[in-house]
Length: 97
Image (cartoon, rainbow, N blue to C red; front, side, top):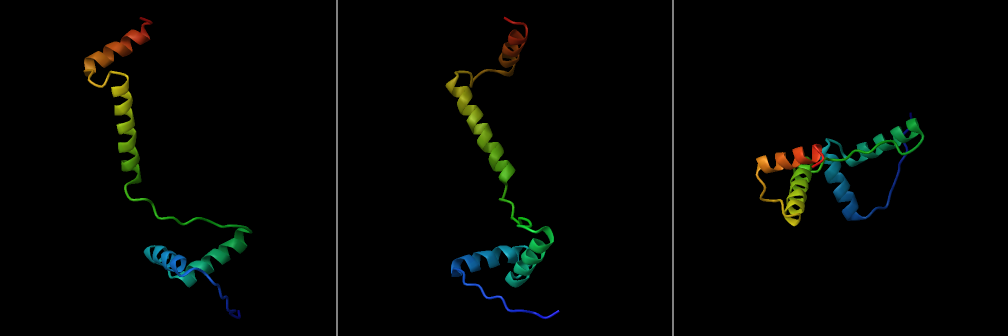
């Protein structure tokens, strides 16, 4: 199979950032572009997304959720309730009191 030359004009910063991402995935930029084009032909469209996970995304989201719940509890005036008081409230609601 004969090889053709593909030339692209792209912003230097974009090229560097993309090269850095692909390097972390173990690829060089020309290989990543060939993979993209090959898969595009196979699926007849945009083929896939390869993204690096955000560091500690789940932990960050969990901490943010806990902070929101803590603020909500404080705003509702129930932030200092004991576990027994919380369970009593739940029981009262379940019993329709």
